[in-house]
Amino acid sequence: MTKKSYSWIDVIPSTFSSLLFISQIIVGIYLISDVSQITILAYTGVGLYIFSGWIFGMLPVIEFRKKGGVKKGKSYIQTTKLVNTGIYSIVRHPQYVTFILFAIAGMLLFQHWIVFLLGIPIIPLTYIDLLRADKRLIEKFSDDYKQYMQKVPRANFVIGIIRHLRRRNRKHQTGK
Image (cartoon, rainbow, N blue to C red):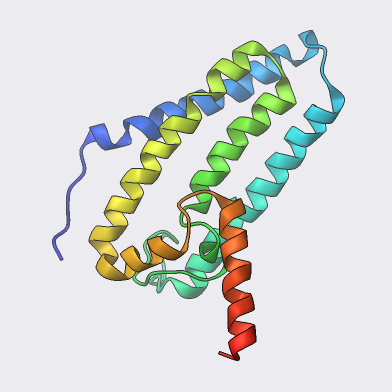
């Protein structure tokens, strides 16, 4: 397996989406007193921050440490094994999903047109990173990753939950 080098161009989407996300929060906090908010949307935004941060943000760290063959002292993302259990049996890229959900949460929480304008580009920029991540993981894990791609959606956790429950139900019915 050859190790591919990456250029600065590869980090442009994540750099811009990170800057937009930070700007979204700063602008939102600064403007929040000027906005007449719909309370239920604001609470939904807070809930989405908490839910996505824990489920899609933290569970991958735990799962990678537990099942990813990460060497002691290395970052949790430096896996040596393909992880397809836990949150990774629902979506292939849960931490990217977190970033998308955080952008939406900011829009719901702060409810200002500037925050919306800052949040909207985060979604396609993050999706570009998702596509690149799949390519890198195919290079790293080859056919095993391609098979995993057939079973688990890239980012759609609703479809991922449905597929996960169907697989679990089938295993339960067949006794395997």
